[in-house]
Length: 143
Image (cartoon, rainbow, N blue to C red):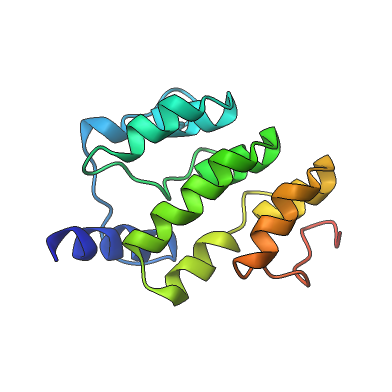
């Protein structure tokens, strides 16, 4: 139960309120990226899986561009990592917060779905749509 409360606290920070939980597993580099961000960006499935097994890893942490690990996995087009992130979120958050995570926007108001579509990652886009991604969202350029 404490784990869910911690994740809700982190989620509330992501949604604009409440405290954020910080620990060494969530240390960031100069771009505000955690180890999980970097593993997703580099399509390192084994590292992502390893990090997600650790207690306290912030799966919804945002970097300086407000990108979550999911945004970066969608940029890389790694369907396995996107699927793993969605499954982990399903284990940790209530359905309404899961949708918020899947539809979260980065600094340019891009959602993970928008990024996957822009990059031509159709399987990733289908996976996101199957998990409640909002097909009608537009970014700051109305795309």
